[in-house]
Every structure is written in structure tokens, then in C-alpha cells.
Image 1: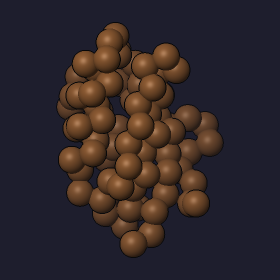
Image 2: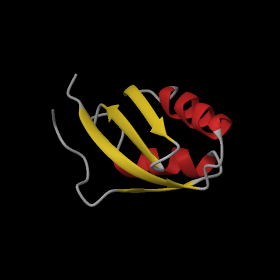
Image 3: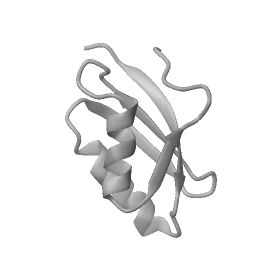
Image 4: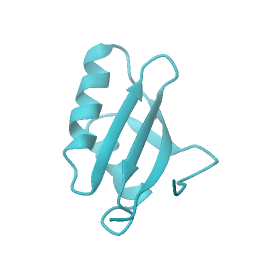
Length: 79
């Protein structure tokens, strides 16, 4: 499995429950290996298989959970 990591800016998070919801929702996606969401910075770091998911798919998952997400300018990177 190939992996990439992307940093997403997430808007609309207000509390630890928001963080938990996003970590659970993103982590349930096939192809996601690891998720870390930081409320203080408003960012989510997602390690995923780019052969299964795209960054747009991840942003769509965040949007479906009720938040807005966009990749940071650096985009997805291979380890």
C-alpha cells in the first residue's frame, strides 16, 4: 500500500466532540491509515492510500460531517 499524508484546514470545529467526530468519520474511510485532528490549529493530518482516496474525497467526508475542509498549500506528500 502506498501512503500519502495531507494537512487539511478545517473550519467549524468548536470543541473536543468535533475533534472526536472528525477523527472517527475520517478514520472509518477505506484507505485511511491514521488521522489526527487538532482543535487549536484547526487542522487535520490524514495518512491515506492515494490509490483508494483523493484529497477531494477526504474534504468531502469532512463536509458530510458538517465542517469545511481544504488542503493546506503544501498539499499531499509521500513519506
